[in-house]
Image 1 (cartoon, rainbow, N blue to C red):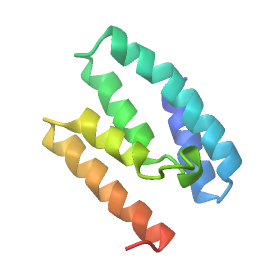
Image 2: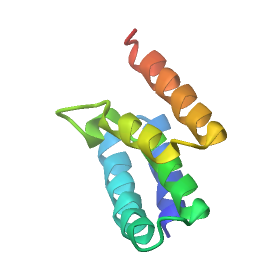
Image 3: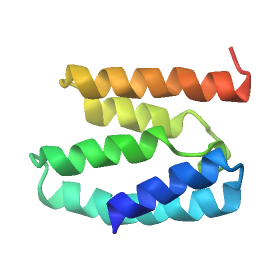
Image 4: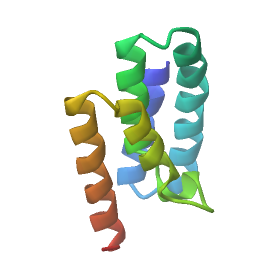
Length: 100
């Protein structure tokens, strides 16, 4: 369910439907964060959570739109592939927002 919510979030974000994207993002995070807390060494859950945070729409954290990206990098620490994905996606998100 969490993986599906992540994909739904990404699709809604691409369709510029921020309300629906935020709902799907929060659903995915709400499912995955507790799983990671119970099993901190579960690489599959960690990877999925990083992916969720990298597709978060800006509206998901109105006071600090960079918060999801920071959380993705925090979770990715120590994994070169996940760190690269998080950094690439952060750049893509800035480009889409036209924010240097």
